[in-house]
Length: 114
Length: 112
Image (tube, rainbow over all chains, first blue to last red; front, side, top):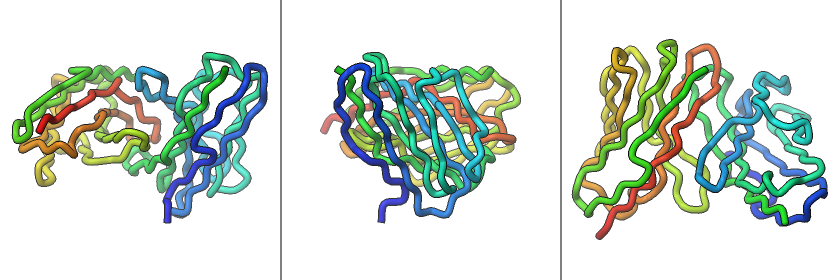
């Protein structure tokens, strides 16, 4: 069983469209994250939720809106997609929000905005 | 805020040689330093971590050293194998939150 699963794996869309990426973890973790990895492989946190509550919100455009219906799911909705949104988006989870806990990453969603 | 610098950006070694990747951090309050390995088409996976109360940690062919005074930590891989080829990321964070700040990654190539 995959611990952290993201769908879809690939997403190709036109500028201006709205799209969602889904993430689920079956590890029983309390905390989930979204990271963006650009073309140069730079990995940067976007959001973090602990028990469905937002705890980290880095400088991300308002077009990005995370939603956590329960602590096992953290979805990412992106409005009005732009060329610069093209990247690989990773979901991750950890036991709780303390730094000492290992973060488990999903396989990533490669978003291409044309 | 915390800033993590990682060097080199690319590293090519012959199979069987050792590889060393170095990172420096800026925030002296950081106390947790994990290393992640990212294989092609996959998400990062933790390979080893070290906390600030420890100077060195080893797990088979992989070791990490931490110098708190100099604020730098290093990953050492001995007897490298082709399957060690991947992008390696260092990261740093404080104990009160899980906000990992990643280095920019090192692409390691192990040539058979």
